[in-house]
Image (cartoon, rainbow, N blue to C red; front, side, top):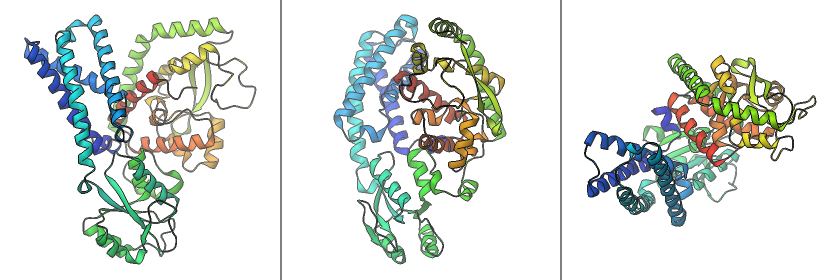
Length: 455
């Protein structure tokens, strides 16, 4: 769970955990009022199922993105109502497909829903008030005033997932171009930490030779103040790695990048099982998609393309063809928004990710995993590796049908997009785990439902 918690904040886990209790409690109370349960064991399982469905619908309505919902009561209310509406629709479908999963009569659900519409907003408002208490916030002092220092300060100010507040910058030579003022020089660091009641120091010095106040930082560390570099803070706040501000030594000596053989073996077993089951269950969709591609335009149904995989090995990737057969003549071209090379059927299968179904075969063959960095074409890999630091390191693991970059960032079509996605890819490689893969799969379903990122 340590790896899982790295990209889920303590505040987010607190909200999620307490709402698990609230939702299950509301369902149990409603069932008690209406006398819905005759068998305690089956009743508990139904409560767990409905609770999980409620939280999944809340999650898909971004109710656990605290930065998004904390600033507006109206926004919170709208998302709660959307989530409740989604729960009602899912339970209505389950009523038809599997009536045995219900928690009782419609009155039981309506009562539980009414309790939740009161309890969840009340809890969120109470939590918001609690987290605004100055005693619940870590006071952060930033050592340095460069771009990374200012970027970290802006991130801290714009998010609500972590209890940080910047009290100022410390630097010897410059004035910070930021809303947060320089509060003193490096030589005053010890006095500043005492006066400002600092809980955490973020070191962001581009050139540390002769400028790093080693003695003061060591004294702060020994007295209980947390000391870390800007790249580590950036990683925690964003779920990506600040590749343009780090040196190879940071990657070498940082925690992570150490997925065990057991983890990789379990990951492979899961890949094989899911790919085999997925091919069987998706076979009707595969046939319908192949037929639709064939009927719309002449040419092959499947599109074969060379991609770079684990350890730089080139393999053939399979997709349903979504573009005209003359989409490329010689030099590879990146896909772009509203690409006129995409056919009508192609646009639909890209939006719904049906074009990716043949990659289940790549997973079975061992070319790919379900989750990992998306494989790129050799032509683009050669270009990107020449201009983006650490780009080749993304090939340390098998590429994936989906990945952390795919659920966190839009479809990339430029060097800048490739660099941004690499930040997410390296974060994934650093924190690779089965639990992390599961959260990415859940997020992938959300992306498909909302139609984000496809081109």
